[in-house]
Image (tube, rainbow, N blue to C red):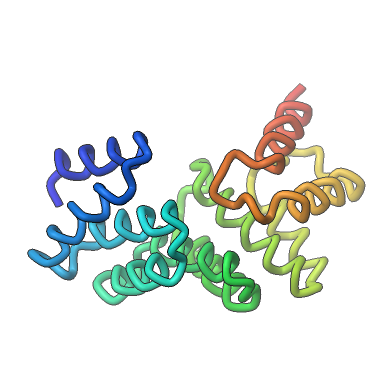
Length: 180
């Protein structure tokens, strides 16, 4: 995909024109079925439309083209979370985080948080807490009580993985508190 095509699709997604974006992307994917950007954006469009299975398929096809694409791994993990497959989600999100080498960017933190939630669902509390701490959003205030609050916030917001959840707001507040 050319940058102007990517910008156009992202604009459609920002305007919540998910079906139109997916239609455009389908044409681009027919032209080049190995286009990782087009496949990932089609996956995002499908997620926004609530079609988790199609989204998972698009992200899987992107991985077939580029097995080192951390976004595809992470979004397949998100799909697994939405399907309730926490074991697979933890593995996929772990792979995404392992491939992503810039811990300063928020997407790695988001994948770490999703991974922590999957581990929490599986009852792996210690591993879950390690993933929360690895999310780079705590920066110091990671006391057991605060970690428990994060876990509680996650459990209350797990149905709203795509949106601005209570968890993200809580984590931002916690991160600010840690820098004061």
